[in-house]
Image 1: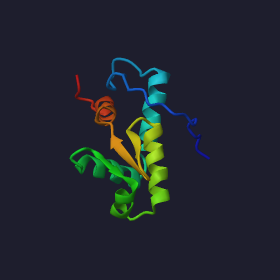
Image 2: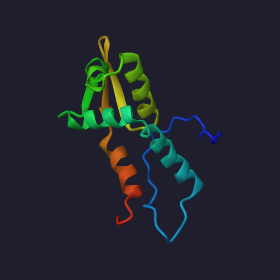
Image 3: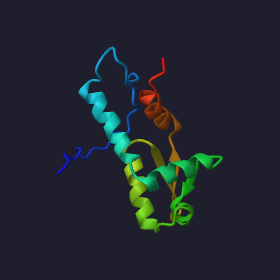
Image 4: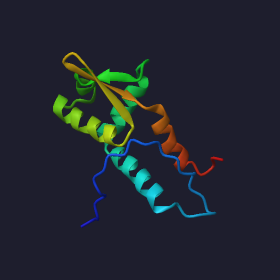
Length: 119
């Protein structure tokens, strides 16, 4: 059975350097990156991030996201909670709806860490 990652909520920005051959990533940075990659490791979550990227304000409510990905609102809320706990989205309640907004800096930070040609 694979070892599971510890459950944590980490919304702090990723500030580790890109992976390279000059030094090994410290355990704390590796844990932070693994937490975010785990949040992105589901196809539905990738679709949700993609949908949020297509919105002009990079935000939408669960009532619009659920039909777009073909899942129920509770299931979409679960996936968005995983993205929220990883600091990849924020949320705001407006009346009875909850709007989720992508945090572009967080998504770019994950990409930057994995970009071997960066820096």
